[in-house]
Image (tube, rainbow, N blue to C red):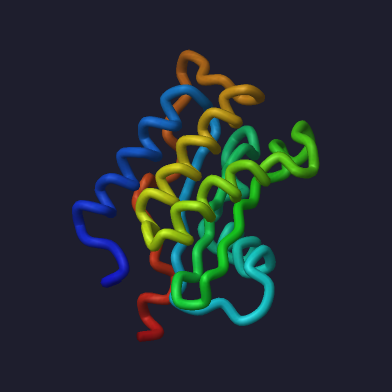
Length: 146
């Protein structure tokens, strides 16, 4: 898990909590060192493994990063995909890529989280009684493969 310091992990978790204050949507971060093949396929697999499809409104978002291979993807659950335009995540990806290109993975992920939260709030605003259905901590998917 050496890609992020404890402080950086806390900053990312706090960004998720902040973004989720405005939406009933759920945001998670999944990290791999390597991704063979398509990052969207890998993100989709992790989405399922993490049980993100089990949210009550099917409005989970996964930001996936394979840091050593410089690959990432943003995917949303069926509830989101039903209501958003096909290129919905493109501006978020562009903003993240700008940070990644300058070597700042933490800020790139935080930018993605905050933009995803803003976009989710448009379609899934926070409502009284909404609960945090998924943990806000980063998930290191390949931690056992070191």
